Image 1 (spheres, one colour):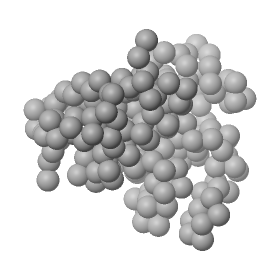
Image 2 (tube, rainbow over the protein chains, first blue to last red):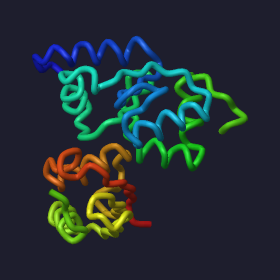
Image 3 (cartoon, each protein chain N blue to C red):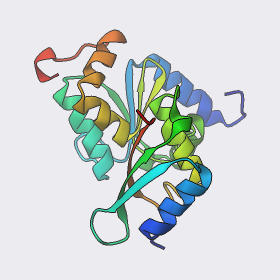
Length: 115
Length: 77
């Protein structure tokens, strides 16, 4: 990402500073969208600590994250700086137990009993 | 402006000609769809890349007129 949009640098920094980052609509306590709520739910069930950013609070972030990830929708999950996917992919990975395994491989602490 | 299931499936098939597309109108309101797309071109691609290929076929409508399209993708067995 060498583009000049300053929000890219911010995102780059965010996803490298926190092991698990969720870009979402609203907050984990008050998600403003069912898809965001589902990803929060999955992460909570796995006992994963995550940093969230509310794209509704920042329009440049809302547009910028879509371009940065080449992904048209919110929520978006990043793990160790890597884009994992949106709601569909996160849910699919969770159902098969793949997400818990992926997180462990990435060195993220999960609550094993929930996996 | 809502899109019909046929319009959505048509766009996906136009972008991914070998794709097998199954589309369900979940709420019957022309707004909440579930699509399953099986395509040989998905072989060797990550899930993220597979979804990006479908979004590409939808030509920027995803996240715009198409808010609620639940998507699953797979390469043929």
